Image 1: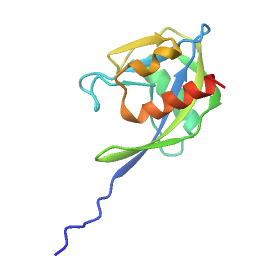
Image 2 (image 1 turned 135 degrees about the horizontal axis):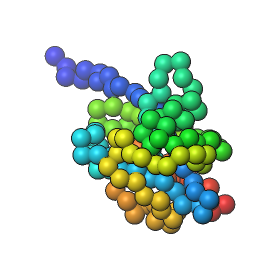
Image 3 (image 1 turned 180 degrees about the horizontal axis):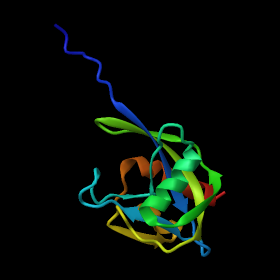
Image 4 (image 1 turned 90 degrees about the vertical axis):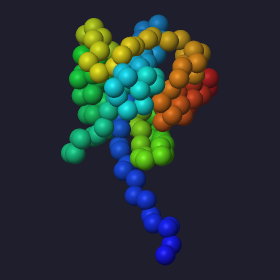
Length: 140
């Protein structure tokens, strides 16, 4: 018998926010030790729910996770990342805070970083190409 069974991976559609401050710093969040991919840095966001657009998801998730209201300025191209047991299709949006103070409900920490410091962090792998693409758009 062959052991070439097809492995069916779960695919998650996720939206994330690249939140840019007025002084052009970028908000990044650190996953808590109890989350999957513990202590990795990421752009905040979450899974797209049934009957929800990627845009609706990013606004909802940021309100739930960070307790702030955001507006979307731009959408970047979706990017797929394959982890060992699942895949993520990440839908990144460039956003700004409209109101509220950041209060973490899921993450361990957050930082405002200059764009040139973004790639210095220990990122969740799916977010690395998003950060790289965002930096390329700044250099054009």
